[in-house]
Image (cartoon, rainbow, N blue to C red; front, side, top):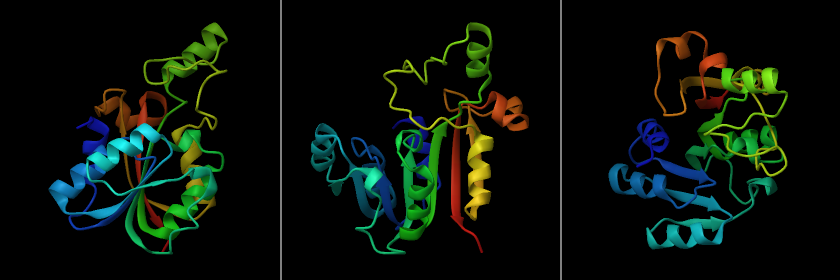
Length: 198
């Protein structure tokens, strides 16, 4: 299992109702169904990924996330997951609120464009950053919403979303003392566990 999906799987309770946005080939849901007896759906737009989900026994719906989650009733899931997709949707703030409408809680992961490597490339070469984790040029990238961890946390405050837990890693999904002390500078990927404000 991919290391980032293993981190997410640890945050999900056995028997939970899970909605996985941009579920890819269904690896996370297949693992959760087999090992934690979860029920749920994946949303995916890629036809090949949808076919793979079906072969794995994952319930999947073809859906563009930019159209929102209006086809799901409020509070119909315990957990809504979105893995490294936030930066590629048109209205991330609206989608996050919709995730917390249909789910009691949500888990969101995304890359940090405030990482020191990105800052260094921009400062020293004057070009948009390209790295192993963000391997695209400015003109062909699917990442249309570039943000840092600080940007995201400000959005959570502005929209009344409560950060239950944050876990920050390097590009190999490892944690360390420098990342813990200066997450916005040294962190590459963040895992945010969110809920509605009390």
